[in-house]
Length: 411
Ligand SMILES: [Zn+2]
Image (cartoon, rainbow, N blue to C red; front, top):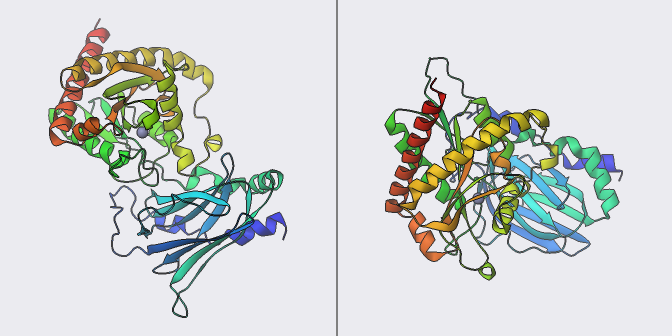
């Protein structure tokens, strides 16, 4: 079969656009809301030459499968389904498959991202109606290939790997004369990208969303700011879209919220940290974390390389100098406020090349609430009392920051 024929064979149905318009701007719960097809089980078969991936479904859905390189992956896009796989599904691979993950990538769209052990070709990708006592199924057949053929298929197929299918965060432009500064809260991760995990299974994406909502409530109560969130439910948003969202809405401040984890071998770090953008990381830990956070799009199967660069480098350079100074100012204020209510990391102010902090014109910080790998941090950051007093401290820092800004702008 020629490469082109192979590509046609696995583009089964572009089912996403039809559903995409339906729920835009609404909050749709990702729980197994009634009406969505249910993915009930998953099986792997075969060996390092040929591997079969099968998903049982409550009813047949259209699928679109494509490959991504570096690392080698297969992505299967499908309409929104409720995943009810066994708890550890995806952690262990077989044959050509190293591991896989799955989840929502946008309203109406789910995705399965399969990490490959090496270059492979999609021999077949199709879905079947239920028949002869068997449930409806999604079937993916992979065959081992070499890097050259893999890259050739990828080049021919580049079109489908574009992140166009990923949800664009809605643009919110006000025309009602509201002149209050806009603050964008950015809960990290979401949907298929769960972030780090605590030993008890709690995910970073859930912790940071809960904290962000609480912070939104507290900030809104002051009546002084307009608060927007890059996500307010369990959805995946690309890093570039988070940045774009802040810029489109002319945010005066961008606060990204995360919770880190460390492998046991790297010690038992604890406490909150505040990061700002820098070309050179302030230390090895900051560099490691930025690397990890910047991989969010890889985790969700979106190629970083295909993201267009919004802003010319020279503009970034000019605007960023001022923006950086403001970001630093807010980071320092925030660390001062947090000090009295939460345990801070022994070196709480750090910098590194986080993609999500790269708005040239929006002062941006990334707040790491603490370490989910540290038992006492985890207990703190998931507790009501801690979240309440910490969000109050952020509100205080925001207040001080904008007061200083106003003072600075006065003649
Ligand atoms: Zn994170």
